[in-house]
Amino acid sequence: MARKTNVREPRRPRTVVLGAGITEYWYLKHLKKLQGYNCVLQPSLFGDESMLTIYQRIQDAVSGGASVICVFDEDVRQWNDVERRRMDEIRNRYDGDERVVIASSMPSIEYWFLLHYENTNRFFGTSNKVIEALRKHIRNFDKKDQFLRQEKWVAMMIEENRMAGASERAKRLGHSGESYSDFWKAVDRLEER
Image (cartoon, rainbow, N blue to C red; front, side, top):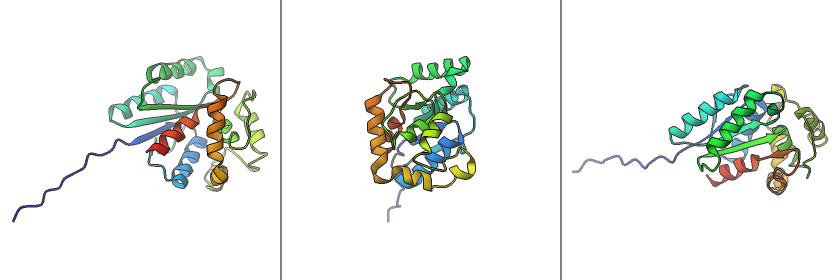
């Protein structure tokens, strides 16, 4: 009798989502569960990683065969020249590279959240100004861990096909105004997997 051999199918490269900030972490963690996205969040709890750290993590993930989605806020470029240059390095290095999606928002990811409810690309300047506008739709929105851990705020944002509307608005508005978000690129990548 012939021995049974294990035939392993090649593993599909994984999608690694890198980012900085607890808001991004909790949003993505909830989104992953609610939408059934197949991805790994790294580090396991985003912190205040520098763009240098993010750049190194992108390189490590890509060299390991993973595709990468990199999520960060662009408002830091307004006051930190070193981080601005590093953001530009990441864009220059990975622009056009199919393995890497840069899903940044200006001034912050909260602008992406706002696009779920409003069609605007006006100047906000800071994430606090975006949060003020966002609280008209998510009354108690707060960047504190106690609020962000709750899945409900993300579930509210994606109900009634709001995320598709946010993606459509972000694509149409592009970078034509003072505020923008490329998070739609992350959504497109996560939904194709």
